[in-house]
Image (cartoon, rainbow, N blue to C red):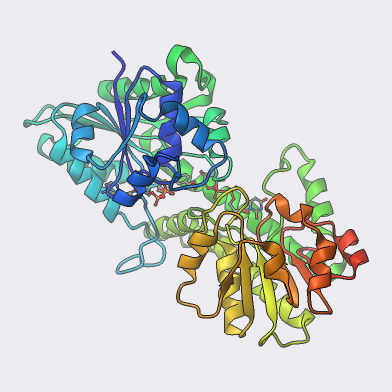
Amino acid sequence: MNKNIVCIGAGYIGGPTMAVVAKMNPDRKVFVCDINEKRIAAWNSKNFDLPIYEPGLVDVVKEVRGRNLFFTTDIKKAVKSCDIIFVGVNTPTKMFGRGAGRASDLQYWEATAREIKGYAEGDKIVVEKSTLPVRTAAAMEAILNGERGTGGGERGAGPKFTVLSNPEFLAEGTAIKDLLDPDRVLIGGPDTPDGRAAVKEVCDIYAGKDSKWVARYKILTTNVWSAELTKLAANAMLAQRVSSVNALAGLCEATGADIDEVARVIGADRRIGPKFLKAGPGFGGSCFKKDVLNLVYLCESFGLHTAAEYWSQVIKMNDHQQSRIVSRLFKEMFNTLANKKIAMFGFAFKADTGDTRETPAGCVARLLHEEHVRLAITDPKAIENGRRDLADLDGIVWEKNPYKAAKDADAVLLMTDWREYPELDWEKIYKSMRKPALVFDTRNCLDAAALRKLGFKVLNVGK
Ligand code: NAD
Ligand code: UGA
């Protein structure tokens, strides 16, 4: 009989991932649990007012919720009734004590492990879905199989736990597409009879009912430590590409080269490929910074100081990109920003999400606020989160309508590449602004020549 599944953590990972697991495995029951009652209520809301915005998510939830997908705060009951437990709780950067500012804060993860241990009655497969430092599975094992001894041995009483690592590679904004058609699924497990059997169970979930989901050749299996490290390494490599292209963007601005042209030609080399070469305001999102910092911390912990220094430059370059945006605005606006109105177009860390965690727009907004800029911020999906992020700053106006945000502004600062921004009536915007009217398009997504024709002064990144 197919085993039922529970995921602990109903956030950006747990919610969409389990919705697709339920869609592709209609013969299994899938539970998603969280301690956050408000979040679970939103997942269960009658009008599908879900706690996160993700294209295509509502349709999947409509199809499976109540059929074989259940959102609940009753973790005890869900753990008891399921044999396969995914752990998708948050693992933010630790902000206190040892490793502060770099290491992962593992308190939520450890609390979950203890909960599972407390509630489980039979043997369980526990699957790390969160991004975790290498060798976390060893600590998980020690907590879960404490009385048995590590390795899930036969000593002592109580249920036996087999711990696997199955990191998630989806990107926000394309989560459903990425889940339905992933480049690869990674499952790391111990090379023991229990480990191999558990890996097969999880492979079967991803294969889906009647093998209609992920093709077997795309399901890659490794040892647990490789799986844990691969997730951090994959994010670090992606973040490093963004920092590399942004480092070249400054040089383009200084020399008259054009970063989009440079990136297009570099990316035409099949050894490099065209993706993740888009210059911009720097990377945001909840994971790149935290995972690179975690890698830096791991390198330092193992005495690999040169490697740690190498990876920390990726973050340094990213921070620099955001302060460079403000410096350029300052220079273009006659070296004074005080009391000028700037309309920020886009606050989400990328298009197609309402997520604002580590968004470059947040950092730039703070720097502009220090300069006494009058900020009006607009975004199609992120106003609620943005308002909360900047609650400590006075005088910020949040405006759903971009035309209203731009009215009487000295500059429009485009921070997020929402598809609707190039479609706006820029002539109308120009007419409503103070002159000289400036557009700083940090995503290089607007038609700069057309804007210049209208009378705008236009700034881009890397041009
Ligand atoms: P999130 O903050 O959106 O969700 C985590 C949820 O876990 C929260 O709702 C929280 O209330 C819940 N939680 C915490 N402790 C709990 C406990 N003891 N019992 C029950 N619920 C608990 O975080 P997220 O963005 O979903 O990320 C989760 C993990 O997935 C992180 O390790 C992250 O690095 C990784 N990840 C995220 C993404 C992404 O796109 N967001 C992609 C790949 C991997
Ligand atoms: C990223 C990874 O792409 C996922 O594989 C991973 O699972 C996820 O992190 C995670 O672990 O959380 P995500 O952060 O959701 O996904 O979004 P990305 O598309 O990777 O974009 C990250 C940031 O880089 C955004 O701010 C984006 O605007 C920026 N970016 C991306 C660029 O500036 N240039 C690019 O060429 C690509």
